[in-house]
Length: 340
Image (tube, rainbow, N blue to C red; front, side, top):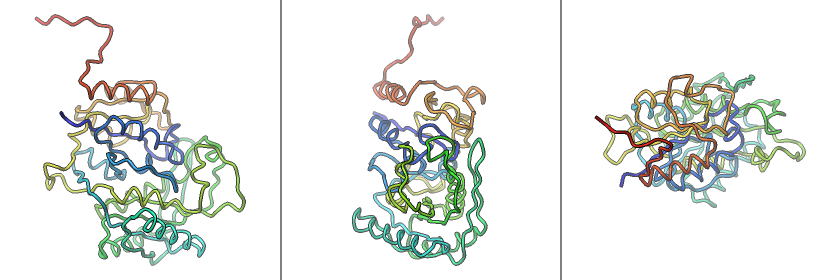
């Protein structure tokens, strides 16, 4: 029987009502991974600050790599483990640095993650963030220092890179109240895209934020971010078994290409991403648009002329996946046509 391969997309920095906060996409990944033989998704779905969930049939693929893979340019090679290198921004203050060094050792000794070492950038990265009414984005003042530091880790044997950069003070009351856009998601994507494009290996980002002086009750959707002073643990967990990326012309028969995708599950109005458009242009997978998950992207499949199956919820999407996997005809309300 052919394995059921599902791609779960919830783009970062667009205010998705599900998956746009602190790891609130993890329950969706858990749900869909229960029926999919292989679920492919990205860090925005699986990262939950210091929280994560082991899902052995889920592949953790950074967004830039996901776009290249959807376009048929890259293939994914599952692995049993990676040697992870950690790159720390030299702009971290002493307390932030200690918290992240402790997080590295906790991941090594508590979870058994193979962290081969850490290094510090030779100059401040200089992250700047911007948030508008429809999304968040950002810039990096010194991208070269990120690349130099990451290259040092690769030379030392790292197969995946976790990067921690200092973020500026943020006005994020709306986000902490469970509404609005994640103010750091767009800038985080810029950093990970840069490293993956340059290195061609799995990379993911954890922000270093100034800790709150006193404990504050926040919305349940962002509560994971209030549990500790570092977001690094979930990144180390994800990267520890992230698949390797390689050009499609070097792929083996056991590697996973975009042609293996049977179904793409996406928020109903977040269909403007390069990866989904590339897959839709090839006409191969079924695209399932989930109406309960809305965003500020406001790009529906109909607006792009993409054929999609609309469902009301992720639970309904899961039901359709069960039907597909079991070979059921899911058409209703019409007689079997006579063919002449």
